[in-house]
Image (cartoon, rainbow, N blue to C red; front, side, top):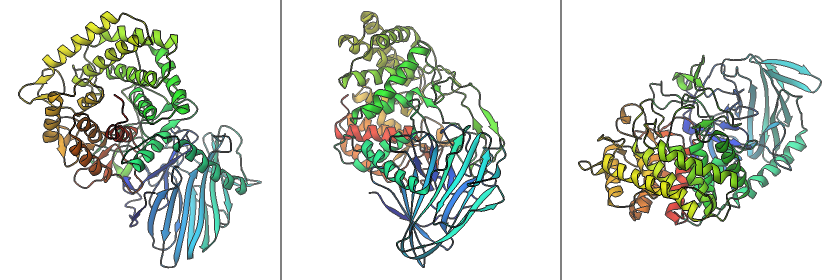
Length: 600
């Protein structure tokens, strides 16, 4: 079990460092728990619902759930092994107390309500504790109010109802905010419980504390059953398990979709403006996740998610949407600004994502990669999906000649090298699937266009001067996303090796990498890029360098093994949304590649 003892990081203007957060979840939503016991981000019932608790982005009015000693303390944190249940140990001058935070499931799986349990156990001495539940404004869109009921105080907010259940943590006292407060003393051997339960547009279920305690056991067993199915035989088992569990947190159980991150609008730099909403399901992230989990031996969840994604692709084919809402609906293409300050005042805070209607050729390679991996794992593609994949291959035969927004969702339409490589990969997978009799189609045309794409890349997207694949055709600029196509198998020759050297020289800062040329002036290093580099190095038999880089990157995780989107090379500070699916996906791919399980 990874355990880290860290000094309590004081809040500054109500905010903590982003690396202070540890995610917990229930397969439908995610809460972020800070070092000091504050739950500063907690949407319910779904991850993309406007958050009731959002001090993460609005210290004054965002709302939070607090639970910590009243005296100065030090903190030690770890997850219960094989789960997403977080254990925080507070040490004071008078004693020690342990808090286990869990978003509960029930005896048969997901609960029909949201249930946050905070289990408090006294370890040594006595520790005075205080707690509060303060509802926020749903990012400036609603006003909470407190209602007395026959069973205690109820917080109402838009269509959400919240109740607090207590066992040994003191009486519920109403306060301004609206807020419900309490205090108590944890003593050696004491066993107390604070829980927050919520429903959306339905009656409020108020389970008794004994039922909530039983659900803590069910939740532990639920996560362990899932993580015990992971098949990994390599040197990084703890990081692999934690990253796989993080991806499971970001999966939306009701639909099978996978969110890119749990948050919106966490800044990519200290100046702001590059703040985005990642509470959507990108086809790219979903296919990467499923491909990796297949390689790690997951079956039931993977089959459900593969089926959902392929049904979605069939409905949209041949014009695949880059991203979708978690329920599968196509979102509006515009972003909406919200009138809240943002983390440490760095705005804007936005809802929605402007990439929804972009042309990104990479998604075709992603769909084919996932389908090929699924078929190679001993599964059979159904006739409807086979026809859809054949149609997509025919589409790629024409579409690859077009400019697109690229993997990085840029406003400039160009002939991006990694997009062309993804089209090559799509057609290469299509040909292989046809040879395996998984799909039928015009393999002669697919083969011819696949070879034309390779000729185009080698002619237009290679720089003799830089000895590297370039960012886009005709340029001398560089882009780390071409590393994905060492993984796809497009190139594992000296050309890719010299591209690696060029990327590290221009975009590298220690173990970290910026996404593409010029980004050191606009944002921080992108964590996933370094893990892609690990995979590429390993696949090019530069294994010593790969292992060294992997170890350096794992040291940059926070105390519980989580990664954000970006990391500041100067001080290791987290930036961007978190936990970030792509960062953990790239870590998993690197670990699987190093272990030889990749099977590519």
